Length: 454
Image 1 (cartoon, rainbow, N blue to C red):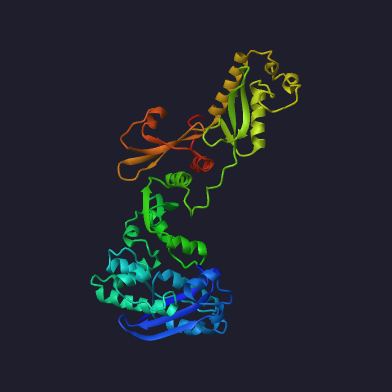
Image 2 (cartoon, rainbow, N blue to C red):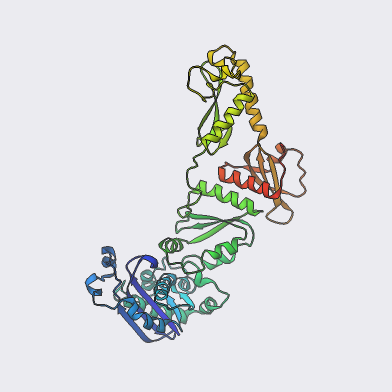
């Protein structure tokens, strides 16, 4: 037997919204054999826009029972039947959440008439309840009221049962089927086609826009994990409703998946990705030539489209590093913006040879600045990280050159690489960020990789 359900609520997510009306039609698949309907006092004021949509007012529910008063009766109707609804996860998540609050554990099989409609009646322009019923000439009385919508869903379900020549309903009810977990607009074929290998996956909305990017060691398992459970929060419910398709890009290794995910989040700025979208408050050494021809090292906030000579997170770390360069290469602290006092402390400490007072030629001073920069770059590690490819006969490669992320790519196992420059022909250059640099550094430490520039 099937319990065909529709509810009206005060909002779009169960954890912060109440139920204002419940309708349950018990059906054998063709005929309705019993029904239950009731208004419910949600215990909160009904928003004006909800009243405008459903017609349910605060006055109408003032004398209605609270959910706790009818929870046992509702649970008894649902617990031994297959739960059927249009966009089933919405109704199910609400009732499961509110029943659990009063000690009832709802755990039944589910069927979604949106998903079944797409399979059994393919080709319609829309599968919303109103449009689908219109296409199938099913009348809806009292639209956006629980009783009217549940009755229309029961008639729709009967038509689905009668037209189900290929066993879509039976297939959806099999223990191995995960359709009842999936978002209503996501084709199950796309989920089944996902590979069990590392990579990045993309959730797209109705217009094809990417709304979420994720990384995975196993794409298939990770994607399916998004749809298990019954989190009733607004963010999750809205997220699931907006997923209409999935695409993916396989990578050879999990590390490459982490890197590609970060790159794609920065590139696409998806609506439901929240991490890695903060602006990185990092600093760097920048080089410029002043009007007198002296090269000057300056600490500045990182610029969006200009790579610094050297990067660091804390200003104090940068100042300490620059002070050590000033001492080691006998540079002028004034020209490096380490002091504003007109009396150069470098003269007293014998590190400055008078460049700040134009007593040392720019060419001589600049040579030491360039030596300092070269020293900085030589200190930075270089790593070539080889790993599995996306298939047999292929290997992956990630290149960090002198502390900078160059890029990554794939090459056949037969390719012989004799130099870093030769390797670059097989790689795709990518922009870097601190997250990616830390990933590679941590990986190198964990694996005990020695720097090529050590």
